[in-house]
Amino acid sequence: MTVASDLSVMQLDEMVAELPPDGRRAFERVFHVGVAFGELVPPKSMYPWIERQFGNVDLVRRQKIVKVTNVATLEGVLFNWLRSARPIWSHEVDLEEELAKTNGDPLSDPYNLTPEDTFGRVESEWCVTASNIAKFDGFHGLVIFKEKHPLRFTREQIHDYLNTGERWAALAHRSDPAAKYYFFLWNCLWRAGASLLHGHAQVLLGRDMHYAAVEHQRRAALLFEATHRENYFDALYTAHELVGAAFQSGGIRVLANLAPVKEHEVILMADEMNDALRDRIYDVLAFFRDRLGVRSFNMVLYRPPLAPAPESWDGFPIIARIVDRGDPAIRTNDFGGLELYAARVIASDPLQLAQRLRDALPA
Image (cartoon, rainbow, N blue to C red; front, side):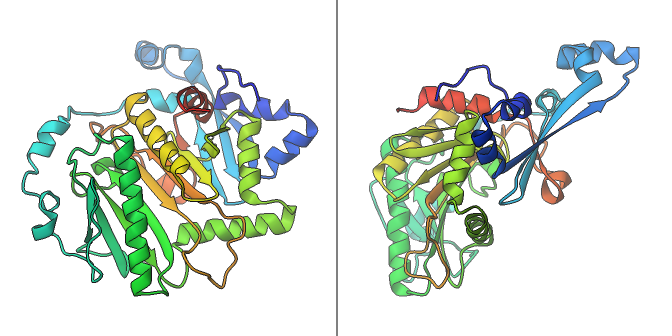
C-alpha cells in the first residue's frame, strides 16, 4: 500500500474513520482508538515559558490525547505529542569514559571471573557464554560480547550473538528436556536495566510454561482466534498495515507497534529463526543507533517451545521486540505509576517511525 509520509498517530482516529468498512472492521477487531481533549487556562505570566517550550500557547490550552488499546491483549497507550517537549533534567554522559572505569569488570575476563553452566560454555568468534551468578530461572546464562562497547555492533556480530544463544538453548534443553521455553534478552546500558556496561545479552530456558508475558500473549491469541476465526498475529499485522504502521522486509513482518511498551517499539515476526530475521534485527538495531540516536534499548526474542508442549502454539510466530529506553543522560525514569498500573504514556509517533523504517530497511 502507498503510505503518506506526513501521517501522525495524533490523527489515528480520523484515519480509522476513513477506512473502507471491511478495513475498519479488521482494524477494530484488534484496536480501539479513543480521543480526549485536555483543556487548561494558563496565566499570562506563563506565556513566554510556554512559547519557548511548546511553541504556541493555543497548543497547550486544548490538547488532544489519543488513546489506543489492543483489545486482544489489553495493552493500552496514551499519545500526546506535548509530552515530548516537557522539561527533562539531564546531565552529560561520556560513554567511553564510563566504559574505561569498568576495566577489570567480570565480563572482561569471563573464563576466570564468571562461572560456566554445568554443560560448559558456548564460544564463537564474537562472544562466549557464562552462567549468570544470580539467576532468574534454573537455566539463565549470559552471552558476553568480545566487543566491550555495546553500541559497536556489526551485522556479523548480531548474527553471532543470536546463533550463540540458540546453541546455548539447545545444550540446556539437551541436559534437561523438560526445559524448553527459550527467551533471549539484551538490556543495553543502565537505562534499559543493565548492571554492567560491557556488552552482553541474557538467555533463559524455562520449564512448565513460557514466561508470563509470553504466555499471556499466547492465551490472548487463542481467545482471539476462537472469537474471530482468524490468526491473531495475522490480524495484528493487518491492523498495523491498514494505517501505514507495518510492512514486509525480506519476508519478515515489521510493525511499529501502535500500543508500544515505551518509545519507538518495533515488532518483528517470522515463521522461523533464519538469517532474514537476524538481518532485520540488526537492521532495526542499526536504525535505532544510527538514525534515531538511540543509545539504550531493550531487545528480546521469544518463540514457541523447543519441544512438544501440552498447550497449543499453532500460529504463534517467532517474535523479536526492540524498544528505545531513552537517553542515558536523562535522569527521569521512563516508567512511572501510570505505566505500571494504568496505561503507557508515549511521546514518539509509531506512524512516523514506520515511515522511517520503511525508508531504511530493504524491501
